[in-house]
Amino acid sequence: MNYDVVIIGAGPAGLTAGIYARSKGMTTLLLDSGRVGGQLVSLYPEKGIHNYPGFETIQARKLSDKLYAQAESMGCDIKEKEKVEEINNGEEELVVVSSKGEYHAKSVIIAIGMGSFKPKKMGCPGEDELFGKGVTYILPAKEELVGKKVAMFGGGNSAIDMALIATQVADTTLIHRRAEFRADESTVKQLEQSEVKTMMNSNLVSINGTDKVESVTIKQDDKEIVVPTDLVVINIGISADLDDLKKWNLELTPEGLVKVGFDMSTSRPGVFACGDVVDYEGKYKQITTACGEATTATMMAYKFVKKPYWA
Ligand SMILES: Cc1cc2nc3c(=O)[nH]c(=O)nc-3n(C[C@H](O)[C@H](O)[C@H](O)COP(=O)(O)OP(=O)(O)OC[C@H]3O[C@@H](n4cnc5c(N)ncnc54)[C@H](O)[C@@H]3O)c2cc1C
Image (tube, rainbow, N blue to C red):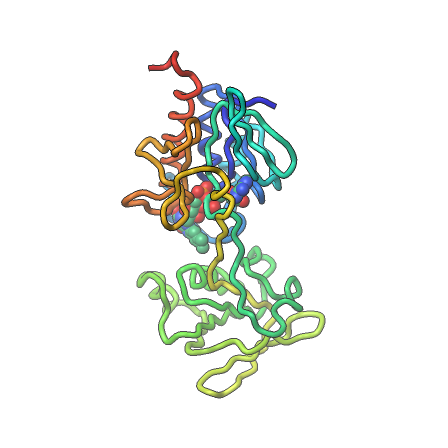
């Protein structure tokens, strides 16, 4: 198949690039190795986003649905569970090789965010055995939490945000291994004013249960405490894997991110990049910046494709 632009990654950056590309009439393919929506659906679907203009608050999953629907209604071809492995130079075009096929592209926009990412594990007995039976790394929908005893592990903004959501319908305990949270002051204040119970200086020893989670064992000051629990939510960070980028012949920063010019161009002609995967001085990884960079990247891809007819 031939496209004016192939966009790799369908998070906020890739979806915005798709919307702009279609508004310029470009034939557009979006490929995502996971699910459309990127981090919004894979890492924090229940979280409220308070800093996306136009919405005082919008649930991450809903913002993703809106972006997806808009990109689809504008005529983007969108394929999920299709990982891009190579970007090769063809005779006149670029050839994007995925896990399922090959696509010819006049331009390419890389929007792979953090690459393949997975939540970090606690590494304790019971974690793997009870995964899916009460152990999770993503907060389930609120309806599934009603009346449950939730043990949330973590001490950053994300863990506190999830605990604040869970406490609306469930008996929630936030367990952190340090003496203090590593989160914004305003978030910690909200936590203090909420009904979330906290256990500090507490290490998880094991997750217990046979067919489902029944309790967790916590070590606090050399004392072991068994806390009855229905659901264990682990929120201690993410490990990202951007190794794919190394194969794509791009100039990278020492941190392994894509070096871009002010116009979101990369070191390869016809290849642009945007979102969390790019770095430059002053870069701030947010949804709005990803969308803004996607706009620029797409306009530059459009000019590249139309050359020399576009000054
Ligand atoms: C817990 C948490 C809370 C956050 N809260 C906020 C917030 O409140 N407000 C805010 O503005 N920002 C927030 N952020 C940051 C925001 O989520 C990111 O800045 C944003 O998702 C970046 O979008 P992106 O499209 O660049 O990347 P991503 O959202 O990471 O999407 C990239 C997509 O590319 C796909 N991909 C990766 N590799 C390949 C490949 N080889 N082939 C094909 N597809 C590939 C992935 O599957 C993914 O779907 C938060 C982040 C986290 C972790």
